[in-house]
Length: 67
Image 1 (cartoon, rainbow, N blue to C red):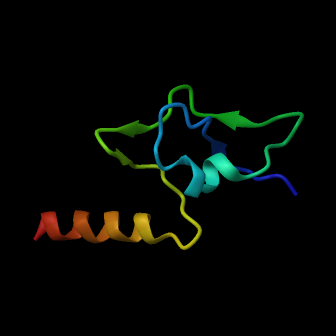
Image 2 (tube, rainbow, N blue to C red; image 1 turned 180 degrees about the vertical axis):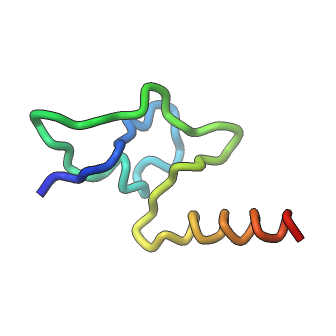
């Protein structure tokens, strides 16, 4: 089954090998990709790791900033 997500081509991203948006097998007929990899300043807001640890940490950081 192909992923129903926006995938990433990983150009210039040091995290791509651990990111599901890069490593998932794309649908050969119709797959959406980011126009530009969302990696900026040593961080990717769209990183999708196997254990979701990066997303969880980002959410915790956001909550801390609002306190």
